[in-house]
Structure formats: structure tokens, C-alpha cells
Image (cartoon, rainbow, N blue to C red; front, side, top):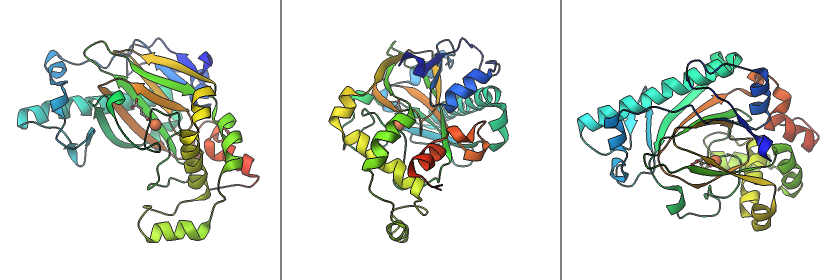
Length: 289
Ligand code: SIN
Ligand code: FE
């Protein structure tokens, strides 16, 4: 299992180097781990990292260039400082993925950047929403028809606390176990969900299978306990990158993390045959969308 995490010695977000082996690894669902790639904070920024940075009732602080900052408490100067910090992370994460995966560069669509100041282990939620259970990312209301979810994470905990993940087995192995148990896709049901506004667009067979895998693996206590898995600590000052729709992962503990998601059309991978869409199509025995 240790080979599911590939360690890279880069220290510079703009010049991490590049290596075809890293590209093959990330497209195989492995985690690229950068133990020395710190997202640097000024002293003033570190002082902001307190639970009361979060506006009441929200879980994450998010930012994008169009809509600005959301979810941070505090007056104008604090808002400006947090905006500077989060937008700087967006720029560095973008530089990193562009350098690591040059062929993606023109095709990546960034999602809002987030700062997550809440502690993982304190969250109380339903089995389906519990990201302390191993899962691949798949979202009930947001069908994506196979579009990839590439994520850059950085632990910025100011108290020395690691972000602890479990990382599971390769996607193909998981899919082989859970696809045979999946409910069959129903086109009329997908239409109904869309008409009712449960989904933001039509749920495809791909989206259906991904949700089935997500839900069934989270609900399977024996699988959670006994499947091949690796517990891994990402210390403060480290960063990591993975396709979270393919890497089986669970967040066990930690607090204060930066996260940047990029969406990538599946056809723009170096090896589209390695994608969850292609793997699920092969298992289903027909092309899926
Ligand atoms: C997740 O994507 O499941 C959570 C990642 C994290 O909070 O570390
Ligand atoms: Fe997740």
C-alpha cells in the first residue's frame, strides 16, 4: 500500500520539476506527496488561524476571483488579509499543477479555493456525508459525466498537528467489488431527479455508478475496517495532490488546511484509459457517459 503515495522532494510551487512517472502515478489514483512544499504564511496570517476566523454557521472559507471571499468572520482588514492568503494559494496551486502536468494547463477549470479551519475529528454527520469513511469523491447534486476532480491540499496547521488520512486500494479493485452490487441505472429516474431539482443536471450512468460506489463503500463497515489501506500523516508544511474521484481516501483528523480543486475534461488526461470513466465502462461492458 505504501506505493499508493509517491513522495516528491520539490520545494518551489512554481518549479516542482516534472516527471512522466509522477503523471502516470497521479492518473493511476496515487497521491503525490510533497513533504517540503510548504505554503508559507506571514506571522500576521498565522495569527488569523483561530476557530473564530469562520463566520457563524459555515464550515469553510472560500474564494474565487469573480465572487470574492465567503465565510470569513471579521472586519475589512481581516477580510483583506484572508483574501490575500487564499488567492495566493489559488495562484500557487495553479502554478504547481501547470508545471507538474503541462498538458492539462489549458483545460483546467478551477473551483473556488478553500481554507478549512474546522477540526475533522469533531464533525458529526450521516454515514453518507462522513468523510472519515473511505470513499471516492462523488456528489449527489452535481453530476459531472466523468469530468475529473484534481485536488491540491496543503496543511497549514499552526500547532504542529498533522492532517491524517487513510488511503485505500486502487480504484479498479474497489469498482470490481462494488459495481456488481450497484443498483442498475435508470434513465427515467435520472430525469425525474433533474426535473425535481435534486440534481443540477442530468445524472448519467457514470454519475450513478460513482455515487453507488461512494455510498456503498462508506456504508460497508467490514470493508472500511478490513480493506487494504494505509494510514498517512501529512504534517504542517507539506502539500499533496490527487484525483479525489479516483483515490480512495478518508480524512481522520487535522485542522487548518488549504484546498484547491480543478476540473479536467476526461479526454484531456495523458491516458484517458486510466480514468474512472474508462474503468467503469470496461466493467459495465459498454461505454458509459
Ligand atoms: C475529503 O475530501 O474527503 C476530505 C479531505 C480532508 O478534509 O482532508
Ligand atoms: Fe473526499
